[in-house]
Image (cartoon, rainbow, N blue to C red; front, top):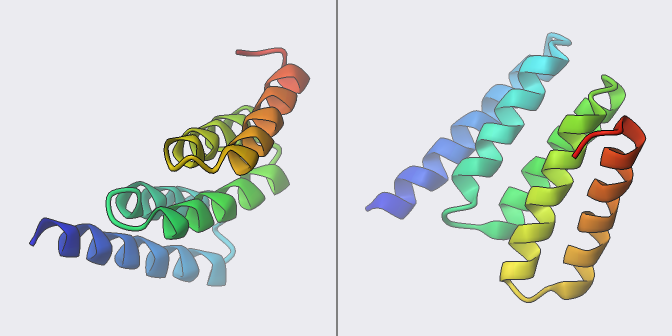
Length: 105
């Protein structure tokens, strides 16, 4: 079953991210959380948002604000598709703020 594979992939990336965090490899942890989020998008949007939020937290600490903006935009679009317009608006506004701060689009 395909959905089971996406769930398992998300779980594996999430576990890998935890391992990377234990060895203080933050960039790799952020990448693994992002990949977990991408896998979970197919089966569990709440879990996908949680993983992307963890990605955002790490990237913010690393000063990677244009990437932070992209992930807020991705979350906003996912929430909009689920008709969670309040959450979508919040994340899209955060994306705009980060893009503006970086002078990028």
